[in-house]
Image (cartoon, rainbow, N blue to C red):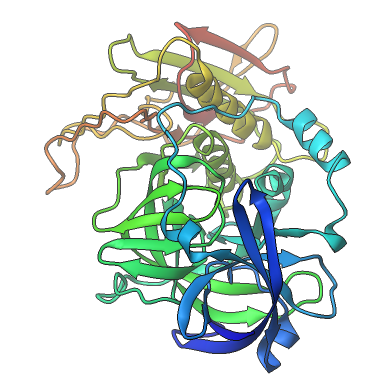
Length: 467
C-alpha cells in the first residue's frame, strides 16, 4: 500500500513525501497498541533518513489521516524505515493521572549506567524518533558538562535560536512544528516536534511521549525550521523557537497534546554576576515540574555564571539565598565554594548544589511544596533567593578568616520595581519561586580554603557572591 506524509525540511513550507507500507506490528507499544511499519520514499528522505524532529508528521493512507510518524529503525541504515502510531491512539491517548509526581533520585548515575548496560542493540530495534532539545544562548561547554543527564532523558541536544513572536504563530496546520518551552528569557531551552492534527483549540503532536510525564501544564511554543542537517549518524532539524501559543496538557505513550491559548506560569529566575570588571544581569523563566526544574535550574545557572566575559576561574564563590514556601518560615542557605585543582569549572559545584537543593524540595515525603508567589512594586521575588547586600569587606574563608579589602560592586536589595509592574500575582501550583543574585570578587589573596557551608532552618535558595 502506498501513502504519503507531510513535514517541514526548511522554512515554513510544509512538504509532501511518499512512503510505502511494509506491514503492521500488533502489540508493539503494549497490549492492543500496534504500529504500522513503513519505508520512506523520495529524494529528500532517502538522503536524510528519518530526521530528529520529524516525529508527529501526519501519515495519510488512501487519502485519510492514518497516524503519526513516531519511530525509526536503527542507525546507519541504508533504507529509511519508520514506525507510525495509529491515529486512534494519537487523538485518544490513554487517560493518566498526573497529580502524583515521582521526581528523579538525586543521584541518577546508577540508573543511567544500568540502562546503558542492558539496552538492546540500536541497529536492530525500533525506537522513538529523537526529539531535538534546542538550546539558544548556551555554549557547547555547558552542554558537555550536563550531557550524561541530558542524554538520559532521551534528548538530542541541538543549538538553535529564537525568533520574534508573529501574529500567525498560533495558526497551526498538520506538518507545522511546535514544542515545549522549558526555559525562556535571555537563554532558552525548547523541544520541537511536528504537528499531527489540530481540532479546534486542541493540538496533537510527536506521536510518542516527550518524557511520558502524564498530565502536565507546560508552555507550548511555535518552532520554525531553518534547515535540515543530513547525517549518517543522526539527521536533525535546525530550528528557531517562536512565540508561546498555549499549554502542553498531556505527555503520554502515543502523543503529546496541547491546547492553544495562554501559557501557564513559570518560575522566574534573575541572575546577577558581579566582578571587579563589571556586572551582568540576566533573566530567565523555568518550567515548574519536579522532574525537570532541578536540572534546568542547574544548567541555566551554570551557563549564566560561567559563559560570559566578566567571569574568571580561580575565584571563591559565596552562595546565599532564600526560598519562601507557603505556610512555612522562609528557608535560608549560605555556602562557600573554593576553586579546585581539578580540570572542571569552578562554577560547576555550585550549579550541582543548586540542583540538589531543588531536587530535595521536590522529593520531600511530607507535602507537595507550594510557594506563595507575590510580586509588589517595591519588591520583586526572583529565582535564586532575594538579593542581599554584600559585606563592606569580603573575606577569604580559612581556618582564621582575614578581612581583605575589595573594590567589587555591592549587590543591594532592590528598592523599587520598574514602572508598570503588576501589583501582585499568586500561584497555587507546586512551584519553587525564588530569585538568584550572583556576585563575586576575584581579588581575594588568601590561600584557597576548603568549601564550607552553614544552613539556617533547612533547604533555601541562592544569592551568590564570591570573595
